[in-house]
Length: 428
Image 1 (cartoon, helix red, strand yellow):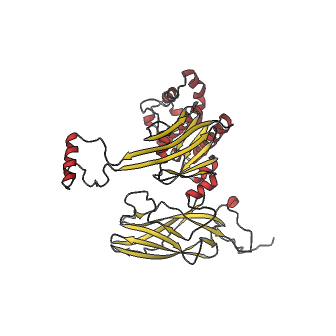
Image 2: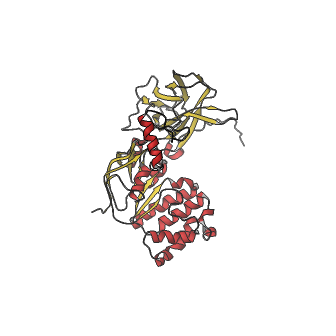
Image 3: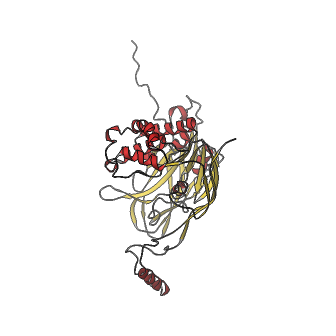
């Protein structure tokens, strides 16, 4: 029988928006007086709004799931879905508003660069400090310290205060400590993205090893679907603070990317999609995308992709451009396409339908998605992004060309660079 190591039941976490508890009684009375008389808040900072002051935000809403010993669980979702909040609750950094978390064992976590490190202590001293936090004796840490230093690749700097470490060195030492010290649950929150590629792969291999050999449970948050697929044997998808999916890795990734049961819709609502920044979508807003002359988004690689994007403009902006970033359905970047010239001078309070086409003949058969960014360039060439919906537009490419070998994306990659032409032959 599988041993239950983590059980979460009806978990909620609620926050209040705005600066809470950061003012004096006099400020609060002035704010109340202004509110009653419908006048401007005299205590607010210049350039800030007060419309959401004190409103409640439900970061996690009635979350429930169970995890057994040795499972490697990927937690994915859009920015603001509640992933980091969930890990902080499990790590007991903050308390839930309601619900229960039952843990059996010690937790080692890396929620941000330098978590659990004291900047004035050396790398070696921080190793012992983290061991003490986990309840290990000095002798137990002594037995692990050489393995930690070797894995971290920081031996030359191990007796230097960590405040002098680069972010990459921080991550290397912090991961080495978390992976080698005794704990039943290892929690990772996107921090490996700071390290170099070789070290990332080394960390993934180590997490897989400690799970298989020591039975440690892994909770791993990442936006890189390729690493999720490499490491995890289960995926939990969070969406606006709720569990949207819990199960198989491939199906979970497809759910996150908007692809279910191999159905590729031809229309997408972008207006209600999340934005990575508050300013995105304020002046220019992408509201919808529709693939033209298609009941579903399946394309032969030798046809041209045509689609319509609807835009609402709330400002006068000249020389708007667009870029599309293509990925495989697993999140591996394939390439990009951008408008060769500015295609729109927008006016305030106007709506536009843009008709675009894109050559997809270099993509081999498979499932893909893309995200859109609409922008302009300033006088010195800087990219000024106006809207960038955090929404992956999925589509599928088929290959019905009977000539030649059918490209295999698993073996050879997702793009056919070009055709080979024999331009000369020499007979010796």
